Length: 83
Image (cartoon, rainbow, N blue to C red):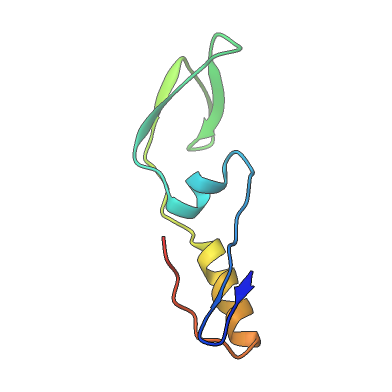
């Protein structure tokens, strides 16, 4: 964090391997079995085995932006995130 008379700047990060995918969301993508012959999951109450499946993607969950905004507001600062 850096502070001067006109501005307070800081950085929020997370180094978990999946953090960016959770924060920014994902587009549709192929998931393929790597360590076993097939993927195993339940769909419609039935156990399913498949070599690969299309994942429909996920919506973004901007938890880092939300956390930054909450911390800034609690300190009386105005929040304007930069990417």
